[in-house]
Amino acid sequence: MEYIADTLANLFGQSAFTNITGGNLIMIGVALVFLYLAIVKGFEPLLLVPISFGMLLVNIYPEIMEEGGLLNYFFKLDEWAILPCLIFMGVGAMTDFGPLIANPKSFIMGAAAQFGIFMAYFGAIAMGFNDKEAAAISMIGGADGPTSIFLATKLGQTSILGPIAAAAYSYMSLVPIIQPPIMKLLTTKEERAIKMEQLRPVSKLEKVLFPIIVTIIVTMILPTTAPLIGMLMLGNLFRECGVVRQLQETASNAMMYIVVIMLGTSVGATTSAKAFLNATTIKIVILGLIAFAFGTAAGCLVGKIMCKVSGGKINPLIGSAGVSAVPMAARVSQKVGAETDPTNFLLMHAMGPNVAGVVGTAVVAGTFMAVFGVG
Image (cartoon, rainbow, N blue to C red; front, side, top):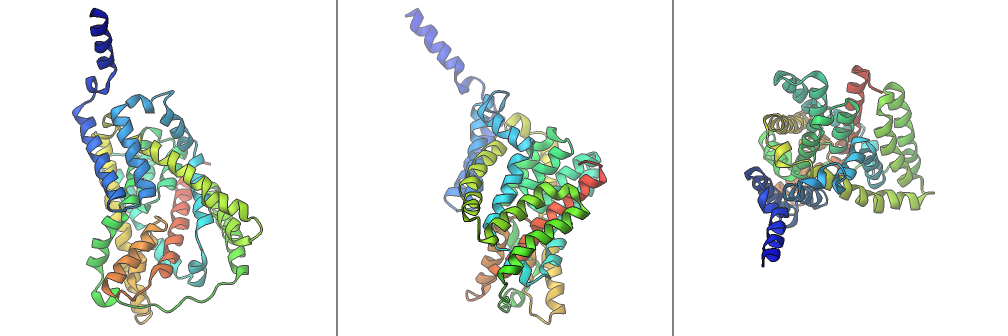
């Protein structure tokens, strides 16, 4: 009987019940809410399911994220900037850049949406973060998880990499919740109902030349953007050149989904109660939300200006897609427009600013790296 009692006591001592804290329970609750939003409400499940499950695991079994733990190995690939760059390649392979080529004015809205990044930078400085910490945190405002991770690692801000990555990816996943109220607040019903003219056809030659030309121009001006811009444009070249179909299919399917699983679970696993429930992390999360809101608002407001200048030919809703969450932000523009007029189709028009936002965020990251002398 004593042996049985000792065995049961040892088993209980090894269980999570003896070490779980109130903070762990809070984070487990958050994970369950995120799983509900992903599975039941359909809010970007490809991102939110692995992130929330990683959050669940680490708050039950913290050792999974410690040295030698499974998700710690995944996270090493984040720290080495391997997974963010592979994500960019997958995005390029999956995305049609035609709407941006057909309507180069989209670059203006994509650039405007980067305003949130600079708001977050100065806000972080005001909150007491140093310049490199502020730069790393500010990238959350672009709603671009891979670039946020990439810049944080390049600037040596690994101590706050977890909260930055978790905030960036959480806001990317919650785009359908965060953006619509801002978009509706800043636009009238008449503006939301504007139907845009069909985009001109884009030739294959244009689509093939675009990633090559953008790579040359951007990386010549800002060589530090080469890992992100290079992988984004290489993936798109796989898609458009028509001679490497196997590479395009691998980059946009198998590789992309493998990377999303590894990156999502490892990002979720950075949200242990010990690491996440503290003043620094809360500041980062608040800054990220404010920055994302300002980025969305700036895109919409520039969209309104372009609407006036064009004589009502541009629906300002597509400006909100200038944040870098591809293609989630473009789908939200379509959804909000269709709520006003079910026959209104804005998706392809919104993809222009959306792709421009991806390029813009990478350029901003490269600019920060150049300013701080990081290669």
